[in-house]
Length: 413
Image (cartoon, rainbow, N blue to C red):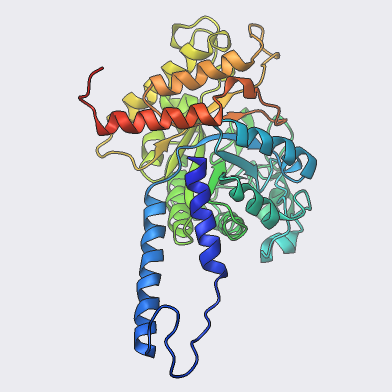
């Protein structure tokens, strides 16, 4: 898979770097064309071929096997050298990198009027284009993580866009972080502006996190102006933003995905509170990413006493529920299901187990057994148990065997 992706990028680079040199008067060019009309015809054919290539690439996305990287990690040449060794050696073929972090800081300098106006950019990643170029040369698919509505920096810089209580005070979550108002279209434009800049920097996909309302009790005290809501529910406005983002970003040749709570697959009350309608969002996105970390499920979920201590069973049950939920929609959802998996130890729980290579592999196997093909590992510090992954060679052999099975479904041993 990596070799294939790399070949596409290499071919694009070569074509993009070629310069046209017109033939001398009265002589044939190297291609044997004599006339200006023939040259124009050839150019049109080449352009059509490149366009068809782009359409094919857009309709056949990578089967993502990825990890999350913070901007600090991505901006460190020494850290990235270590990670590139692992990306080359294992089945990994994608990375998710913070373009805007959980504090609302944009992680590299960008040509965005509003980002520049409020001063939200940093130099965490000093040379974003060099980073994306390097990763693509290694055949890596690039996903830009953009937290949407938990943005304390924007909320403080533009208080008229933040969530406020009836007494006029700013709503803050348990971490004392302010949230912006999902009903404000100005917030939408800010997010799209950042996403488009990420695309220009070399990212293939935009992944929105915190594409929801806050969950703490104080959110019930927040007042939303009727002029903004126009009678729309939380789920309706999050879905409307999802549609808008997909429409705007696909025009730029970008895939769009979103992170959602694993609980919204099953709980209507949870889904309404945070504003995430799993089935309807899956009908709009290119990929939907439920966070099915075993540590996030309460004791007794799925009939499992302590879900964190049963990684395979927890992930399998969560994703089996996804299969059921999406099978009941009126039409087949457009989104691929790409779950987030746990590669960290939840020592804050009363009942937990240390997570290592075995637990990582069990979750990945649960994804496959539930009928899905993609996954991303989460560790906030970027320290992963690579021993739980297949080698690049093992993954390539597996892809080859899978392809053979699809070509010869009735062939017996």
